[in-house]
Length: 301
Picture 1 (spheres, rainbow, N blue to C red):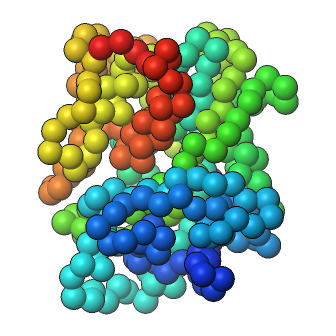
Picture 2 (cartoon, rainbow, N blue to C red; picture 1 turned 120 degrees about the vertical axis):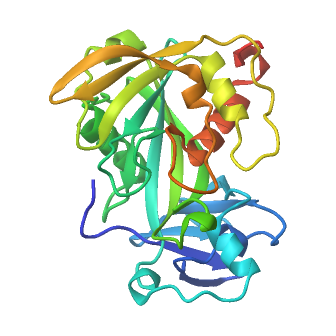
């Protein structure tokens, strides 16, 4: 997944461009301090992932969002904190995550391996870094194949940009200074195949994935409603299954098991060890996906 020539994020506002600085909020470049979202133009330009307040050739308009508890935002609200030089010099990396929707209306999420250095045991869509000379869709399809074994043939899917998420690890300043900083482009890839057809070709990589699940709309809507950092839940469907079927991977083999639905509804803790949950950025992407479905596509509470 990691490559030696990762693409870094640049920002352009009012005609002036510069590299995005590690530990400083990229979203905050485009919105007031009290807000957490802005519509920007984004795209790859001369080997850079560029975010701009004006359209440029080949760009796409997208919603850029950070969580209300974004560590970079919190750093800007308090006296300056000196980040170690090795962190400051990293820059902000560009990433892509693929929300894969099947013809049967399910979405594929994977649980990150416990050995990974960031967000271990957290449920996310397949994804990874943008590397030199890659287009965003190519990144998403490559990562999908590397992590799950799924190769989508041309003509069997459609796709579009969902939105952009500012991701920092650890995700809360109360759990330590930032060590990783990304802008993640969430792409919706709609397959003409059912989850049963795709399941037959799944060959997940245990080094990156410890489990996966094909989740149905009611559970996905409930996940999207459990916004991290919010004082209360959103409109969670009242009737949900007690458990969700997942496939777990261990020592080269896979097995079907049930995971409590409540696990997918966990929120990010402000202190202590993380818990198994769906990532905050994934919840953001699922909300955008549900909005795109319209009322007819929503699960009924």
